Amino acid sequence: AVEVLTRVVHVGAAAVQEFMSRHPHDDVRVFVVDAEEAMVRTWAAALGPQSDVRVRAVRGDIARLQEAGMPCQCVAACSSWRFKGPCPVLKAGGKALEDATKRTYKTGEVGQAYVVDLPDNSALAAQGVRRVIHVIPPNMHPDKPNFVPDKDMVDTLLRRC
Image (cartoon, rainbow, N blue to C red; front, side, top):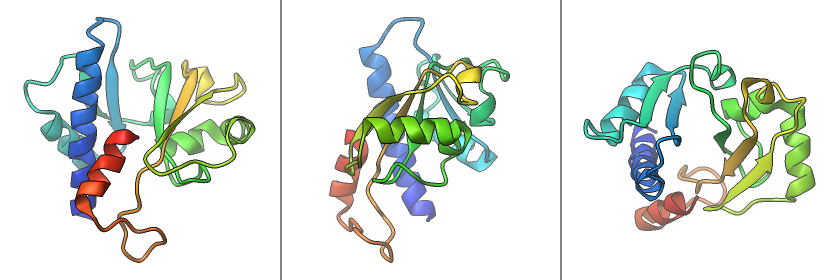
């Protein structure tokens, strides 16, 4: 599990850095938020000491970003092809996010990202969030369906989403 998370973090950090290089505007910020301090340290290390000052890995609650001084208009959620999962963003978005997603998309495809406008009645909307990006990573667990054993393919799919 640690190897999988480390791989996801390193590919994710490279994607964040690439995104920031394409968006040099001062008003763009990226907060990588996790409730676990160990994951925050892993992200910070992957982003590197020379990381763009507009990118921060922080420990926090994704449902309370604005209260924590991290106003965000858009958040990403790790989802399954059915747009479900244990992701804190999905939990914080609640039924309003689930319904909006179902109205917009039937199912998702691994390696893709799906943008959903967040309804005003979602708890995340009260935090200033306007859009949720569902990202669907490849399955890297050998005992689960649709396991992707090829590490290069895993990296490719992670970069796409």
